[in-house]
Image 1: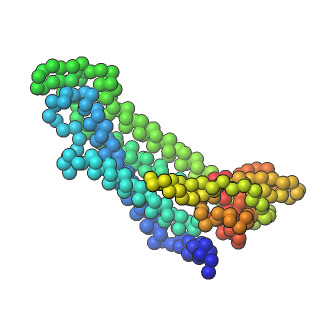
Image 2: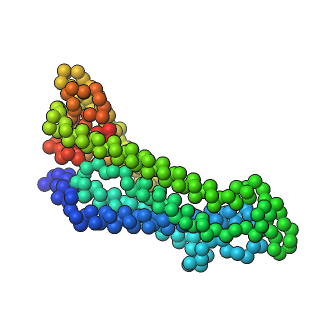
Image 3: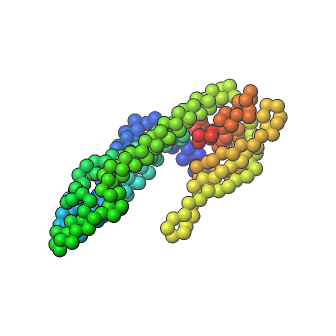
Length: 289
């Protein structure tokens, strides 16, 4: 059996399985927890930097959590960061399986950034206060120094830094909401066109392979930008560019099929392209794909 067809069939069998959904939910929760831990680590690191600008080196107070001794900040950053990435990757894969290859909504990035921001906000509430506002108090030699402008910026970091992270999180959430609305509309349009639209064979005229490079300089194919030519209901040639992130759908055979609205063939959002023969609904790539 064709290995590509076998992978597609397996993904279709897993679509809608409750066990896969439960696994995805658990993965999302794990990602959020790890992101929160990462946020606590980032907050603790900023607290150390803040302390260096607002207090003397002779201040014996410890400006960071010590759950696991001096390595606490490093542990929070490493465990939180790696855990967040791994959990997000597993969850992303499980969501793909559950949806049967259907385009995935933007959920994990807003969730992760929001959890990081929450961790920073919580951590900032426990930052130690300077011994004296406006002065680096030298408890050893009593040669106090007035704060520089950086000292004042650091002093208010418990306000502006968490606020900055919250603003970034809000932007991610707003982007996710807009993207998901557009994706929902695209899926609705595609579903309608599968019964009311026109399907024609397309011609691939250009393929730009996209790659990623690891630390060793090795490159891996992660997708392609593909230009497809097709003729509309009036015989007019049209070109459309679609991005495929599925390596199994790389157009090595040159096959492409185009689904469009014959009454509005010029509308980019109503044109879908598939690179599989007998494509499943999730194989059609639109502008939100």
